[in-house]
Length: 444
Image (tube, rainbow, N blue to C red; front, side):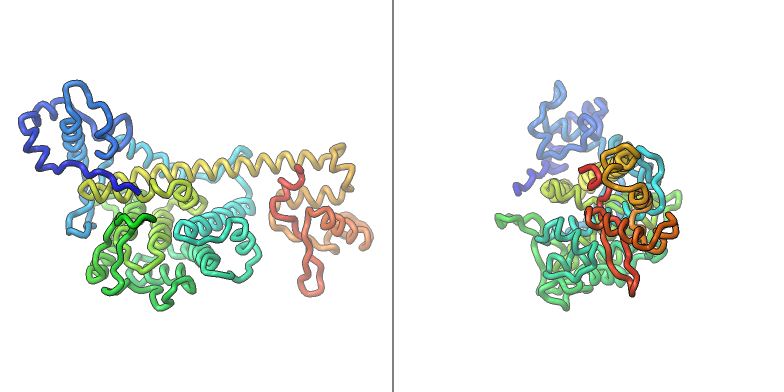
């Protein structure tokens, strides 16, 4: 990855253009360019406003950003405070994310049933577990990962172990909303995420040691980031926990979505563990969002969006580090990720509800399937569509439709033969359940 060109220093620009500062302030140049929070690396190639050169333009932008900047109680490796700037586009996207993350899970067909909501939740947890692990090197295919998580089979390698750990951790975080964040809690999360998936099992749930100081490089060996030394990690972790637990009074209010994203950034920046830092950072983001009441966040998979453009994820860190610790670059990127994840959830729900409606129409009398299935079998499938995961037995089917045992048995086995249902034994009782993605199968 090509490193971004760092902006000219503030002192250097002020010295070169000191006589122009009054004029620049009178122009009221905004903090953004066309609604984008531009970095010098890109802005230097753009045409500046008439009467300005690109350095003067940048100086005017920096004045605007400084007027809006808020310093955070978190520091870079040189001891300087990180900052954020709540520009117009940042505030607009914060509003949209907060509105949907605390809103109602709804698709084109209205509010889904409790069963459907649970199904969507499991789907999102699986998606986040898979893609978060794949971002950090898990080579398991998505199809194999889904099969493993659905069947509950034991993982076969490190990649699958990473995914299972991530899935179980995400499920566990749902019960930790009332727990303050402590270094011990972060260690516990890291231990759950990396259990059985580290070259050194003893590195799970502890800081990296002095001999384990690392640098972040790209595939060509270019150094992208040098995390703080191991000796500073205890104090830095405590500062992060204090920030995460900070109350939201009138004097010190910080938007909870901003807080969650900054927590994500800081743990990734500090890189306190030998491995699993990204997964831990993203897990803490979810913990913070859910703790603040954004319950819909459970249904969002940010890692599936990050995996589509991992270079932009890395660049958001690099922009922050190269421009005086301005975390707004990372904040802006993550807000875009969240909005895409939100759109993905609504799109998924709409597609599934439409598929269900179409499948139900295919089961109506006179349809193609009506000629292949009897009315009792169609009733079972309609029931399964409305109640995903529901189990059926021969005895209940027999009583419901007032038919002989052999007839009821033939009905359900016929659906198994048609590959629309699966069967298994629970004790001595034969159980039947619709196959996953039944609605899609009916349309084929």
